Length: 220
Image 1 (cartoon, rainbow, N blue to C red):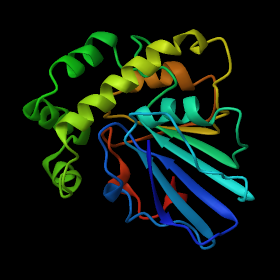
Image 2 (image 1 turned 135 degrees about the vertical axis):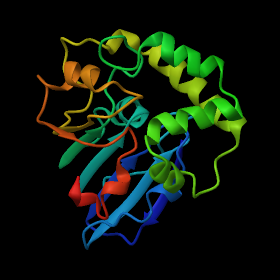
Image 3 (image 1 turned 135 degrees about the horizontal axis):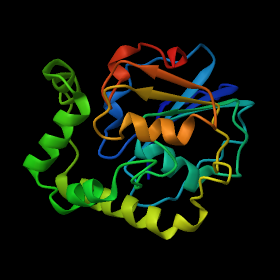
Image 4 (image 1 turned 45 degrees about the horizontal axis):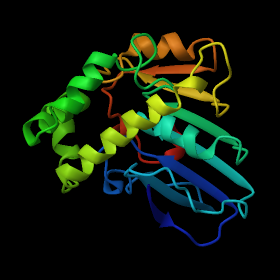
């Protein structure tokens, strides 16, 4: 895992963001936090090591998107208390026919991850040409690196599947879920299946990548 410290001036509050698979931190740097808040962006999940000591912060607001939800759970569960924890377009079951991405679809993405395959994924994720253009305005990470990341996510989810139980609490006490009605990566219905009985849910009209909607993190 890599961490980009967008703001690190020893503020009392932290905005901690776990990005989705294949994302680059440049996609999110335009989002601002409230005054007195440091910002850390986590991405590139090829190991689950989280070496930052967050105990100096009095308040931590966690936001996780897509695969970042499960990666946050596997690295942070039980280590910190969060002032708020917002899950955006994903669940604790990222590979699941009822609560996440159907397994055959996930496996198909993994098996066919070429440059063209990634372009198809990005088109589905962004929904429109305008949003896709915004997403692709930044140079992509190397394809081999992205392949390794997706394989690592798959292996990690399978390895820790024994703690994936719909009847048990989420590893992180999520305080809110945001679901895009036009999500073609994590089906909105599957997200509702998971979150509706767990925490307050807000549904928005957007594709899987919704961050073009906001200018500040606190808008989430």
